[in-house]
Length: 280
Image (cartoon, rainbow, N blue to C red; front, side, top):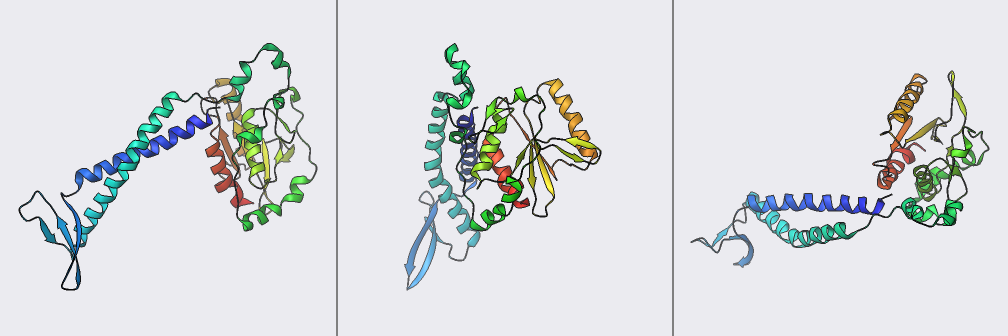
């Protein structure tokens, strides 16, 4: 999991992009700067160009020129902040070592490999603390009884559930654990893991089930190894069967993915905030 390095990369890309845009503003801007003076009790704006024969021109009524000079000065001052930031981030990226809990565990002596993963760290350490307004918290609270009700959980290959959330739920991957930890931190969004249910003529057990505000359930499937052809084909068939019973990606079926073997928590948190919470 290279969460911190990926976050830095996104920040660096943002700074580099906005730095380039402000450099272009300076290249396109007219020479000179904006001055102010008072003349016979009236304010005047001047276009000051020290390299021209007529160094000062009154532009009090020339709004387009005022805009150009204002944007130029803002870009100039912004670059004084942005350019050092870009250099600092580039140095940090070169020196930063990716933080991957699984890789650290793998580097330990053989004796440690006999211990459960949750002996070493708590998944909550890796999930961002996120805050909601009171109205949103109240909407989520209305689903609490549904979330606490018993349900049938899939018993398919239980030995594959090797990862534990901070509340002891056994799941199949560290990415699923992190997604669920994020749900915990969003005011404990009610959810069910691998709930067995019949929809149409199919019995399914989606990774996560949620109850919508209209009491209609919607679902999330995490696809973690789509670079594995066999895994991808199997999940394409699953998604086709879901579609046949009315589970449509982007509608009542949400999909998440690993990227190069890692999970982008910022993407997950955005999905929770903008796609899951509004439906609750």
